[in-house]
Image (cartoon, rainbow, N blue to C red):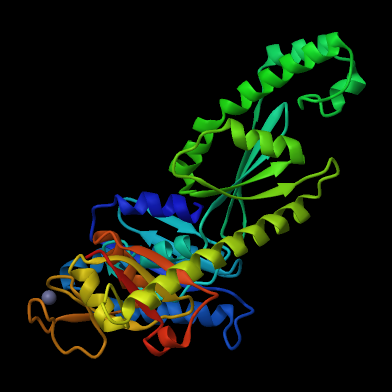
Length: 386
Ligand SMILES: [Zn+2]
């Protein structure tokens, strides 16, 4: 079983168009649905999907369908959702702790929903600072998805133990400004220097978090003075420190994570407000932004959209041209690019993210500040690149 991001990274490089993609909501708390209903939906949808498949590929489809149904039986009674990708070469499965929209897709792996979720529940990093160790947490999809520690070198630790009494060693040993005799001050200064060297050496680890987990924002946690000093020690490119958690010795991990979630929420609210204000201001008069689904689809596919903001629970039906993959509003009768009438229905969550990736448009899902003006325009606004 893969974490969603790992699954996404694996599927994005798949170059086959004989893949069966399945997203099923299995959340038993969703009103009016239950898990046996999910299984019935899956069977029916597979049957419907098979009707559109050319007879040459039906044998392959049947084998994948069998595998999908078998695995679904095992996993459908747990979790909130079930995501599967099946082909002759691989079978991948993930159960993120978030809801998905039911979807069956035959062709290239359908990664839109996965990408949508990864944007809506962005990963954040927390670095818990201590003089002997740094504890890294990666938070995503409402849980700690990874954590590990880095410890200061054995030599430095041994040196500290030799020169400092245990009781002093347990106090805030690394912090300059402790009172004491000359000898003690020298020792402490040395330790402080060593600790800061250790902290400085963590900068590449943080940059790595960005690479491995897509983290762009981190929170620093620790005793007040240490967290501040740590912040001065590290140099990180393209990663923003969005808050600080003051910890105590008796740290309760749940309280700690709640504090982190609150910081993240405030940070997201602030970003949203900035973006929405910008779209609102620019969409009037001298048009450097547009509101509404139709202009958004057009501007994106002209390569002119830098950023799109979408109301969080929006899920409109769209159409994709089977011949040229142009994406259209659902009232279209033919492709405006190639005039083909061979159109395929898909949800916005499936069709839009791949389009945004192709045209390098940043997706922003807006949950807090949604002005009337934007709601009236399909809950969508885009900022122009030019
Ligand atoms: Zn077309």
